[in-house]
Length: 252
Image (cartoon, rainbow, N blue to C red; front, side, top):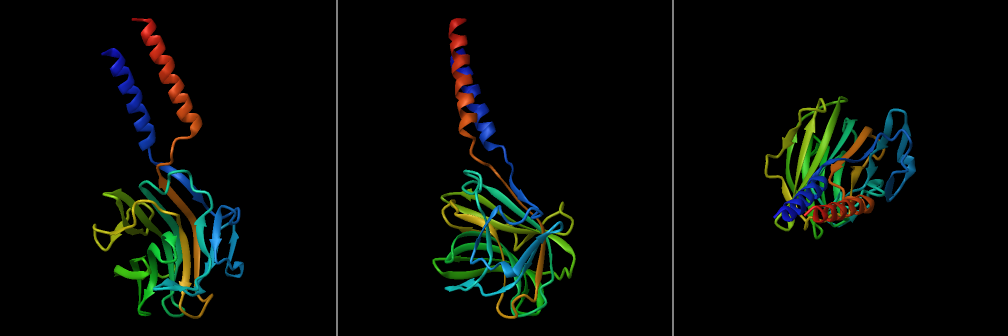
């Protein structure tokens, strides 16, 4: 009986370690863009400094087969397991979408150009600055909804969350004006997408025309999730459990 209790304690300790969420990736861009793989890269549209990343909107989009966007920033080497589990990605920035048609900055969960979910801030219908949640599956796009909120040049936080369940995942969008209190966009339901796995997470700034007319000033990007335990950690745990079990048996 004592042996079973001991093994159960080891199992619970492992599960506790596996379930502990925290920051698994963060970048303030002061060291450049070396942490990123940039799809359709055009370096003339971005620069870095001690203040972060200055990213200009590029003409193009990924919508209903359109794939002429530029500078989709994706995390180059996300920690193992971080994108397969639940996660929260948060970006601190300022962005005043005033120039061109449909100017927007997007946080994006991305498998390929035909399958993605994006949480954006844009000039919706070229009238009102708004937060919008949208997705595309098998090259068929859909808007989940939008909320008008004109923030002007103020700093804000844009957030996208992923929660796995029933062989799919639910994505939700939030924003904050102080980095602490977050407001959900489009209610609690969010949108279901994919099978729980995910290829990339990142961001992109786009506009239908007038490229370069809008600047997203990004000061931080953070991914909170549950990475897989390292091989060395699992080895230490296994060794500790075996040693403890041997000591237990010797004392019987």
